[in-house]
Each structure stands twice: as C-alpha cells, then as structure tokens.
Image 1 (cartoon, rainbow over the protein chains, first blue to last red):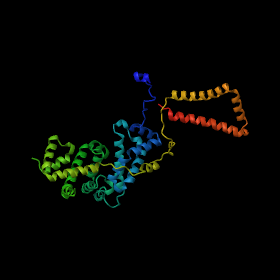
Image 2: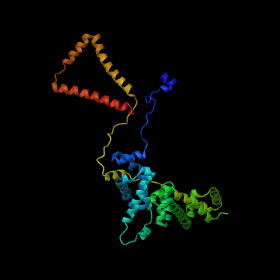
Image 3: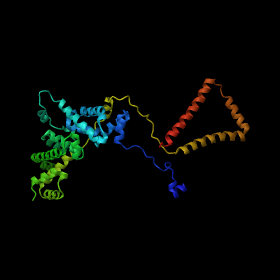
Image 4: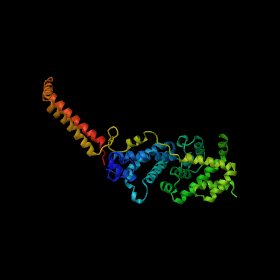
Length: 210
Length: 160
C-alpha cells in the first residue's frame, strides 16, 4: 500500500482500486455488423435503441396504423440491411429513419380505400390523433389543431424537422427531398401553424386560461 | 419598425433569423401583447412536436418475435459479477486455503497421534455405506469444490 501511495506508477493495470472499463457504450457500426451476421442479441440492441424514434415517425405519419408501420420498418430493415453502406457517409440512424418514413407512407397508401385518389385521401387524413402527440395537453391540442390545417407534405416534413432536433439535412435525407425544398416546406409549415394560432385566437385564450 | 406580420416571419424563420432581427422581434414582443402570447404558444407547440414518447411496452419483443432469426439465447439470470480480485490473488488465496487445510490435518496428526488415530477410527466406524453411495458422496463433494472454484473465479476475477 505504501508503494502504491508513494509511487502510483507501480499500480497494476487493474486490481483493488481501479474500476474495470465496461463495454456498455452503444457502437452503431459494431451493432450493425453483428446484425448482418444474424446475431440475435445485436438485433435486440438495435430494436431497443431505435424503437422510440421509429415509433414516433410511424405515429406522426401513419397515425393509428403506427404499430403496423413501426413493426414493418424493422422487418424491412432486416431484409434490406445489406443495402446499407456505412462508407457512403450516411449515418445508420438516418438510413433507418428513412426506411421508417417510407414504410409509414406506404402503410398510409395501402389503407387508402380503392377509388379515392391519393391526393384527396391525404387531404382527408387529418394528422395525428390525441394519442399521437405528447407534451402538455394544451399545447398538444394547439399543435393538433394547427397541423390538421396544413398540407400533408408540409406537415410530414415539419414533424420530421422537430423529431430530428431541427436538422434540415437529416430531414432531407429521411424524406429524400432536396435541402432547399425541405427548408421551404418547413418555413411555410411554420407560417401556416402561426397563422392558424393567430386565427384561432388561441394566444388570447391561452393567456386567459392561465 | 417591426409590425406583427414581420414578427410572424421572424418567428417562422427561427434559428435562421439574424441576431438583429431576433433582437428587434424581442423588443416588439415586449410591447405587443398579442405577439408575445403568440410566441409563447408557438414555443409550446414546438415543444409538443419535438417530444418523442417511448414506444409501447413490449414493442421490441413483438418485433423480435417477427424477425426470422433462430431461437434467442438468453443469458442465465446470474447475479452481477464482483470483479474484485486479479487472477494471481485469487489463485494464491485458493492455494493458501488448500495448504492451510492440509497443514491443520498434518499438524493435528503430528502433535496428537493418538487423538488423530481415534478420530480416524471414529470415521472408519461410521455406519457402513456401499461403494456406490460412497462414490456418490466423494463425487458430489469433488463436483461442489469444482463449482465453488469456478463460481469464485467467475465472480471475483475480472476478464480483460
């Protein structure tokens, strides 16, 4: 002990008082590699890690069909994982969210009754229901009311924008749209939300309620 | 001078607005009550939209059940490892415990041969057991020692 105290260089690399490094950190590329090898535990790690975000995208885009869309996303990732290339510069998470977004759009399209044109159906789909938005009930209600009035393509992009922590680049990757289009959709979407808030006079009622 | 319409523009621009614009908007919100409340309500809406609630319970398990993978290997429900001792200390302690046991018996036999002989006779005079039972007892004892050694090593010695 005396030696340890006076000459710390002599400490063993591990032992009484040196905590062991634990491999607890999530390494995206490592887990993806192990998933490719068909390792069951790696798949569980991957699903657990990304389920919240995938489910959130599914909720926002596919509404009540979120569970189907989210499950279908991971099944599609299972089948298509060999097409993901890390060296292309794309983060795995962006690639995964893009799959989630596409699957959710497909699910919405599949549920469209035959005989109704896609555009018209999208206009009818009224955006997220009460259970699809969290936050304070008051603000979730405002958000829902405002979103219901926005064009579906603006709405989807706007929702992705907030889900991704306000990253134009990631939204462009996920929705497969040019960056300029994404920026313009988001700006118009926000203005539509603001206009809706002003029109409804909710700013007044909110303040009155507090 | 900023009006309510400009204010909405700046609010919609968010982080893309310039610092002077944001400052001007702040000044406007301080004097225009309606715009101040609008900014507040919009902030709340943005927070609601940014919220990522957790996926439903057991969602991961439902997905795993649908993935065409082999049966899942679950780790044994063992208590967490202690990882306290380096291997050389563990081996040294195990060897020392064995040596002490042998030493105690030898010391007893050396200092009190008659007592040791009496104890050995008492052991020999135990109710007779057949060879199979005796073998089982010896085997179980040896297996218990091996398992104890293995568990001790597993729990106490860290792996690199």
